[in-house]
Amino acid sequence: MNIILKIISFLGLGLTVIPAFLVFTGVFTLEQHQLWMMIGTIAWFTTSPFWLNKEDPEEDSDQAT
Image 1: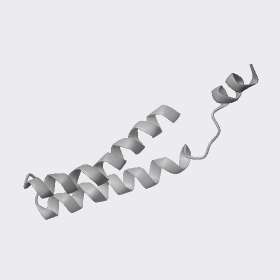
Image 2 (image 1 turned 120 degrees about the vertical axis):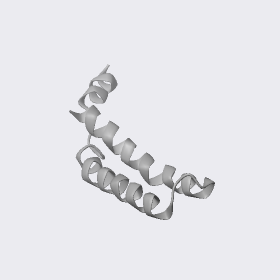
Image 3 (image 1 turned 90 degrees about the horizontal axis):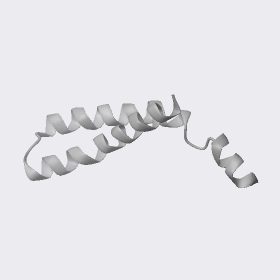
């Protein structure tokens, strides 16, 4: 489940960056840019709190050896 949240989070983060470049190149209109950035922002802020700043139990076991 944690890996799915990370994938959705990073896709959302990408959706907040990539549309700006697409508007700059003329591929997206301003309305499309706003829509995709809003979707990316919602995806990032709804999924990232569930896995950010959480300790990974696998990392703890690696440090013990």
